[in-house]
Amino acid sequence: MKRALFALALSFFASSVVMAQTPAPLPDTPLPSELAFVQSATKDLNARFPNPAAAAKGGYFRYNNEDKTGAISYANLKWNSVDPRHPSQLWYDVKGRLLGADFGRTLTMPAVTPNIWGPQSATLV
Image 1: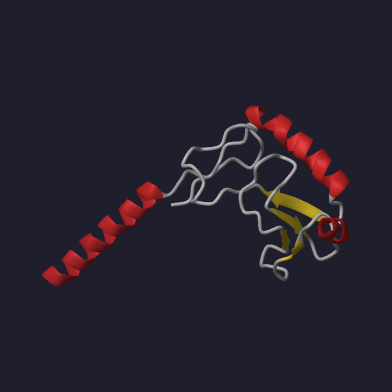
Image 2: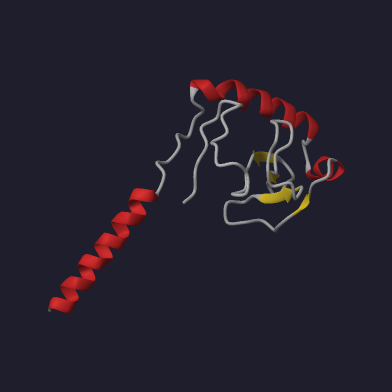
């Protein structure tokens, strides 16, 4: 019985540590400080990369097959986004429509949360 209680207590402690390190979920809609970036990036990326052929012409290649969300990722192998015109990945649906983009930074980049474009960043632990 003592072992079971100890295991349960240890399990609770471990899960509470993990939960404490999990970032709060980001809102589904852009914050006011993010809206200008979202609108600008949406307009720009839809104009330059409306389909996978345009992405390929721009230096992106198909990185995976359709995932469980219905997205197909096109990557440029530059995993650090240095400006709003160069996301590290573009996402398309199976019909070739642009769904979104990933502006990322690797852990090798300086540990400063980027805030130059306005979006709130998510930190993975």
